Length: 483
Ligand code: ADP
Image 1 (tube, helix red, strand yellow):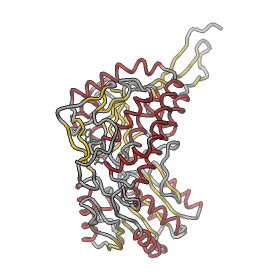
Image 2 (tube, protein in one colour):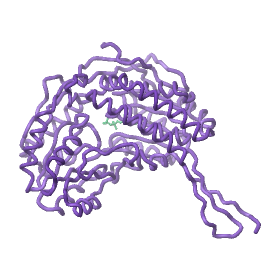
Image 3 (cartoon, rainbow, N blue to C red):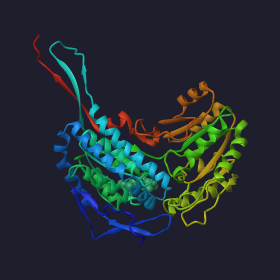
Image 4 (cartoon, protein in one colour):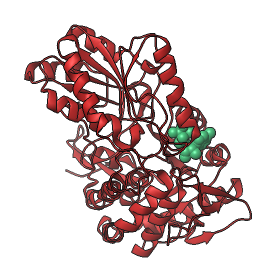
């Protein structure tokens, strides 16, 4: 076992208590394969206890003023920000991303806490002009109640704060199930929330290897009024079904198959920079990573050459290496997927322009790769790659590009590069996606709504929309008002 990279608890958090268990599971450093901690493998009983705690904590937390909740949340933001370096090291140890990206994620994750602390004060209702002289119509916003959150491993802090911060700001309490690969960051930020003054039971963290068991308890319990999930489409659909019986409100951030469209009239430098940022960040393991790079025939060869030149400069190494720009993938399944998709594409005629093989740094490292000549019969066009492999597809006309881009059941992010404003606007309107980057490869932040259409999910996170997800609208009719 490597030296524990965390000064924070490795126990789960229920009702303000750090819970250990005789059953535990290992957290592995993907760069070295070494075990870095053991955390409790909790089950149905503890999940129920967490829901009990969140239910008990709800009345007092929701009764606080938004301003009082904001004071606590801002303290939490300050504590997270002040400990950026330790949290970044911890994130790189359990998730693998380069340290510079981990530092960026701590700031990105913290930004949701700060932003929702303030936005909670603006949960405005409305007064509605009456239709009857003796009545007045008012709406108020109220917290939806106990929330369950199931989080992924690719952004171990930000995907949790993006859920917990608006929930708490709205006056909800929450039970979080972090991903089994990255529980340590979740526990660290939960400890900082307690230190900031978040009361016991308001924010609970249930660690487990038995996600289906914990998920079932969370979805079956009628006291849980909302589920927010980020993860794969298959699991999201199962959870959607499981929530039907108790008619929970849902936010689902599911898979993507982002098209990145480069037109002949693009600025080549911007297109390459955008493709690099969108494709290779977090070693390609984000749901908004460019999955299909569609390049118009007139710029295809120049773009492919420039992209290969930029990819050649990437540095594969453990995330702790200061030169690292591509860390390990999360686990052996991720490596197997990238290898299978690459082999399928090459078998059907794709050309490896650079990379195309594992990297000798360790079993979970893969060479940043560019594949040219991708065609629609290849699996890589339909499946989420989630690795550092760029798939270039050639097209001729704008109409063809739009049709190709939309030819997927997913609709999370899409990107387009063009210097023609009319074209950029026209195509942005036609792309079926919840988020469009025009001449930009990374755009997510706390002030804008993140989310998808079609099978990429329901609801939005971040921005005013992200607070609304944790609120119910109550209509009050004041009757019998004398003239
Ligand atoms: P990925 O393939 O990227 O790991 P998953 O959808 O499997 O995506 O995981 C996202 C989150 O969903 C993780 O926290 C995981 O533990 C959880 N999860 C996986 N299967 C289930 C399930 N059946 N019920 C509830 N949560 C689940």
